[in-house]
Every structure is written in structure tokens, then in C-alpha cells.
Image (cartoon, rainbow, N blue to C red; front, side, top):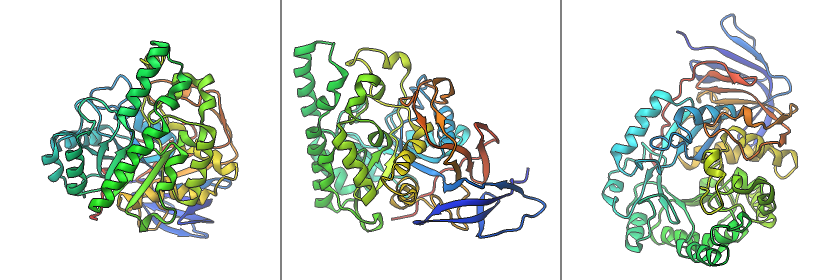
Amino acid sequence: MSEPRWLITNALLVSDGRSFHADLRVRDGRIVRIERSLTATDDETVVDASGLWLLPGMIDSQVHFREPGLTHKGDLTSESRAAIAGGITSYMEMPNTRPPAVTIETLEAKYTRAAEVSAANYGFYLGATNDNLGEIRKLDPTRVPGLKVFMGASTGNMLVDNPETLDAIFREAPCTLITHCEDTPIIDANVAEARLRYGDDIPVELHPELRSREACIKSTRLAIELAQRHGSSLHVLHISSADELALFEPGPIEHKRITAETCVHFLHFDSRDYLRRGNFIKCNPAIKHAADREAIVRALAEGRLDVLATDHAPHTLKEKSQHYAAAPSGLPLVQHALQCALERVFDGDFPITTLVERFAHAAAKRYRIQDRGFLREGGFADLVLVDPNRVQQVRREDTLSRCGWSPFEGETFRSSIHSTFVNGRRVWHNGGFDQTPRAMRLEFASA
């Protein structure tokens, strides 16, 4: 079967720091022409995108799609389809599955599975442990986005808390280190004190005090100190507090060796929302206070925070409905992440060009992803058409993640995802799946 040929006309294109009206032509899965006015040929399908924004497909650099081992929550098929419905065309998935991806063999098994079932383009991190330095040394940096280091509480054997091991990892890792930074002893002490007072009935509103800003900043400082000592390439995930922001420099991501990310839920929720959302916004690190949210939005606008991601992490309704201490942390986010972030554009916190820089361009630059993340001739046609004038209310019955719920339920976003193209195929269109996807393994340039 020949690949579909597209001509998208009359759209407002957003890429490379500017927005402009133009037409865009797709051939053989790639963008072949961008011009003010193109004439359709007989063999192509014309999409009149008048009134729509045409963006590069978003690249989500932090997801947990739960396969293998936790597929009652989600899997590579269900979660990648939810991502596409949300305008995310590429993702990079974390290693804390069962078994965890802490060897080259288990890592490649995930790539093999994704080639069979993923609807969006994919990459997978290798995970660090206290005892897999040999595997880390063998890692080919062109085959993975980076090495994930849990410097805070994690599942199973993936908490790296041995100081000598941490030092060796930062010294010897052949690729960018991706860190979850929370200090476990501080958290454990906070939780123990809360249990003495409340037993198992700890109020969920205490979550940002238990997973405290002090725990975040202590661990983040340690990661930065190690990276500076060894000249490591470091990317700190999901910054959640205003206190951490001073540790990072504003400016273009291209000139940095130490970078930082935040997530869409930290732009949207704050501690006041625990009263109405409860465990359904419980995540690690914790959503904190309104002043933190406001500072994070400003830092994203100025480039002190470089990358926007989701940390999509589904759990079932039954799991989330337990009491606070038993309910797992994590939110399903990919399906509405772009719409959530666009709310900050509509509110005037930053322009659409900044959002595209943080949610598409920056991930492509930081992880050296080839031919994706931009609207450029020659690049892969990973595209999302956004309708900025069609509102959408989030309803549980429309959720595509296997977990079957969304933290945004009942909210109305001021935009909707009109269409999503993956490698030149229109996979999502007007609220439904349009074509069989042809996802690809992400390719990473050498450092």
C-alpha cells in the first residue's frame, strides 16, 4: 500500500520560535514542502485547516506506560493511543516496569514489543540500580534517550542510595543522566511523624508536606553537585517547587549541560485542589502550593525550566480509591496534556511559540532526537492540528488510558485536538482513530 499524501492548507504553523500562515505538503512520511500557497496535485488529500494551529507533534520525555508486568493499569497499546489523541506523537518511557529495564536485554525486549504494538514513536530509558554499573558501561548512547536514576523513593531495586555507586554512575555513564530527585530519609521521617498522629488516616492534603520541598531540594542539589564534579550531562525531572528553580539557569537549552523539566500538572493544580481531587492528584513529587505553581509557570516561560513533559503514570480506580497511605502515586495525563498546557497560553502566561519550544523542540534538542520535534522540510511528518476555538469538556467515558479515569474530569479546556499525524499518517481525526499507525523507534544522534 502506498503511503498517504497530504496537503494541509491555510493553517497557522508554529515552529522555530515563530507562527505564520502557510501550507504544508507530506510525502512518504515526511514534510517535503512548506510554502505560503501550494497547489494540490491529483494524488494528494487536501486538509483545509483554516482557523486551526498546526504544531509539530509533542514529544513526551517522561511516561510510565506499565508494560511489562503492570498491564492492568495500562500498556504500550492503550497509553500510546491515548497519547496520540492528545497530540503526543513520540514518547520516552521509564524503566520501572516488572521486570525493570535495568539490563540491555530487558531494555531491548521493550523495544521489540513496542515495534509490534505502539501507536506513537518510542524510546526507552535504561534504569540504574545499586548493582548494574556493568550494564551502564555497555550502554550505546545512540540507542537510548538516557539513563534513569531514581535518587528518591522508587519501586523494587531501583532506588540508588549507595553514595559510592551514585558517584560511579555520574562519573562513568556514557549518556545523559535523568534523575528523580527526592530525599528518602526526609520523606520517611515525615511519614513516620504523620502516622504517629493519624495512623492510616493521613489526610491527602498533607501530601506536599510529606513529600516536602526540603526533600526535593536536598536531592536536586546532590545531583547537580555530582554532575558538576564529573562534568556529567544531567537532566532533572519534574521540578515541583519554587525553591529548586534558583539551582538552574535561564536561557537556551542548546548551551546547557544541566537542564530541568516540569510537568503539565504542576502548571494546572495546586494544594487547594486536594480537597476536591484527593488521591486523584496524588503524585511524586507532590503537587505543591499556589506560589510554587506560579513560579514554575514563570520559570517555564523564561527558560529556567527547559522541558515540559507529563510523567503519565496510570493506576486503576480501585487502587486510587484506597486510603491515602495505600493509594499509589501517579496520574494519567497524556490524553489532555497539550490542552492543559494550552490553557497557560490562553491565559497569557507565555506565547504558543514558547509552549512548542518546551513541549516539542526542547526534548528533540536535549535528547538528540533526529528529524522530529519541528515543522521543517525533510523532517518526519509528526503533526498535530489544534482547534483553538472548539472547547472540550473532559468526561470519564472518553478516557482512552486503560485505567479509565482522568484527573481533569469535569473541566472544560478551551481547545481540542483536531487531528494527529504520525510519520505522515493521520491517526487521530475529529475524535476517533482514522488510520493504522506506523510508529518508529526514535533515533538519537551521538553526543
